[in-house]
Length: 386
Ligand code: 1QQ
Image (cartoon, rainbow, N blue to C red):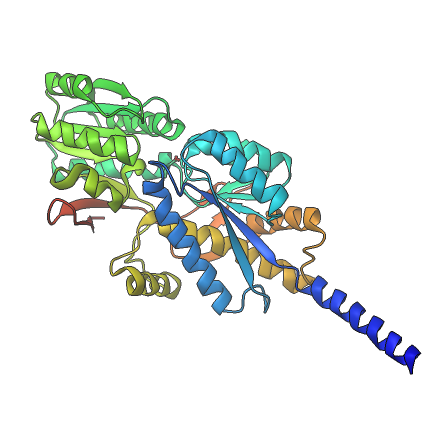
């Protein structure tokens, strides 16, 4: 009697242990800016990632096992990003990381994940050189070299008489430096003359010096590579001091969180897009429907890209799990396998069909340009022109 009880007790304990092993949670890390000025961009990424978590768990998780996202706030700088990555890698023991928000942050934190052999998918890192950081670094955010030129071409379509351009960029931000390079090359390739190049810092709030130089150069197009807070204030000061021509904003201004910064002066800004809510196909249209239900507007690019980042990780995990049940207890091997599978796969995402080259650069087909249309001082929309 006693012995039978002991046997069944220990059997029970064993099966509990086995059950626990099978149910070890699958966690994917998300390291984006949830605080600081960079959260103007990062907030949209949190929303996109959460929508993906909800949708892909509702459609079976990893072949029947739910997964969980673990968020670590990077803040706006490099130190916060390194800290967030270290927590995700060592404490939360995630299989892979979607993040960070800025290329500036990626250049300092991605090497840590690469050395730890943890796959990273950049959801919004568009500077030249990101996938080349290491074997474990890939991105779903198309680079400035393929996205930014579309805005210049669109500006010339709207106003074929444009001849002289002023270019401004944040010199303390890796993405802005990379993007302005592309903008300047494109302008010259299109036969425009770059009359003045002005620098600023992402922490600047007063742009009088730069705006004075722009006005003095008598240009008919201004191109800005910065982030949302500085970029928005720069636009506002350009308009307040009398600049009347077209303005192109780079990817750092690509959010409706810009609207409260430049208000009515945001009106007319052209911004190239790596995402369109109008893209046909059920994957995007389901995403759009879910986003509209919750937020009563169209999803923005940064939400779509973060959604795609989570989706790629989930679909790669599903593939691995189909071949052989996921072993989250052997995390080091799983991370390596996940990295291989991410790069090998093809994905139908809100961005369209996505795959990767050997270095982890995203292959994506369609790009667009939108123009900001303000309704009043706080509310506006992105109107797609292309
Ligand atoms: C980068 C970017 C940012 C402006 C996106 C949030 O493209 O840092 O690469």
